[in-house]
Length: 170
Image 1 (tube, rainbow, N blue to C red):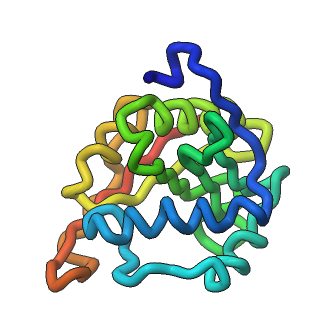
Image 2 (tube, rainbow, N blue to C red):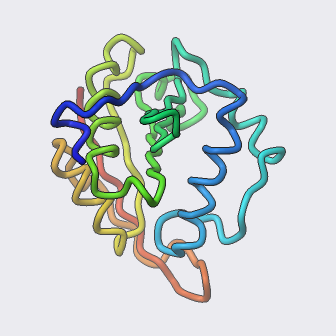
């Protein structure tokens, strides 16, 4: 089931009622231990401010829905809190386990790249653990290149982790 091959899927702005599904997907990534820097599950309540920090016209949070289920989500956020970086966005992309390897991530990333100019975004940054090859390979497939490598800057689950910064100009 590849969404990019025409299967019915809808990308839309997330609404607060989507937050439990967004958190559930994220917590699966936390449990995987190699996808996110969080080492404990998050709660819906703890993510409310994060959710509300997104704006459909500047730094949106989107969900991809299939069969009335949230299959994945994508978020932009300002890379660095200073005005000079306003046109650069850090991206986050998470897919529900039952929808892995079905084109959800590709569909969301393709949509984000296409919409970036409308949002005033000229540069996208993805930050991943070096061992998270599915994420690294997905970003590279869409024209991201390695712009930075930070050895052993993160420690999670009693492991030092290298971080890769991947970037793409729009």
